[in-house]
Image 1 (cartoon, rainbow, N blue to C red):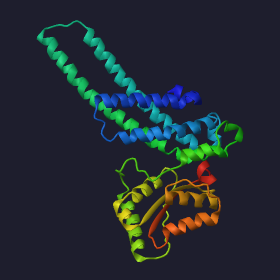
Image 2 (spheres, rainbow, N blue to C red):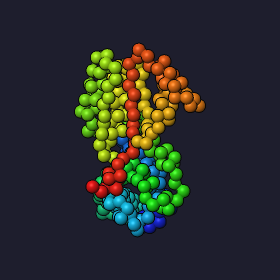
Image 3 (cartoon, helix red, strand yellow):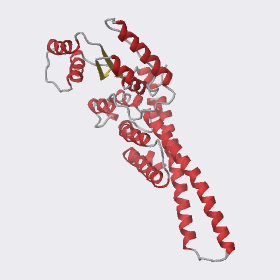
Image 4 (spheres, rainbow, N blue to C red):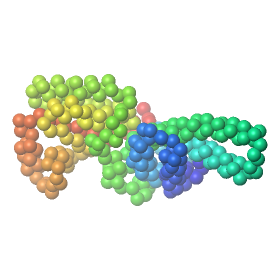
Length: 307
């Protein structure tokens, strides 16, 4: 996998080629159930991986961030595993082609031998594609944790940033309430706890209550919030539900404008803070509402892996 990591310009294009070829094989030879969300996750996160690759100096990355260096090794291991499985599949494809072109001996001995080979290849193929599925899931899992490093790149030496701007980084990190895969594994308890709390607050008639979901990057905070946001129990409890993605260095005007846009479903050029607040007040007066803030931005110590 030297190609993918020797030059940053070709890194993600090489990884994308491996992903594309893997899914071509999976779609052709297997049912690949549940892999659509894995493919979509990779399509979303690989551009962010490219942003990180473009910003770092691979020879100095260990000095810049031990956490980032460890993540790059995890990514490389996942990519190499996927590439190894592709090589294995292509080897057996070539082997079968060579056997097919061989002499067609009609003896019963040959037929028995050929039947055994076919059965063996079938069993091997099943195991191989199971490895391919596991490799794609692992790659998607590692790539998804790139979010914690997207904000790190603008804290390095500015000369290493090249063409990357803050707006580009913010756009890549922005989230929405849309839940790609409705099956969230291992978070049912946490989801139900949050929903139970929200429903109770909604029925108590109290003014404003807050609930914080906290944790290090890559723990699935956004996914948990999306699962809660899209749950039918929440939709039945509140008159309005809104999702606003905001950076940790937000300004009041920008945040208020985002809330107003979420409320009305329309963009706005209004710059007067009071007018924006009046719009929001008019929409929410005497209403039960849920406002989710997905905040991105981390402390330097967490980003760099230093204590």
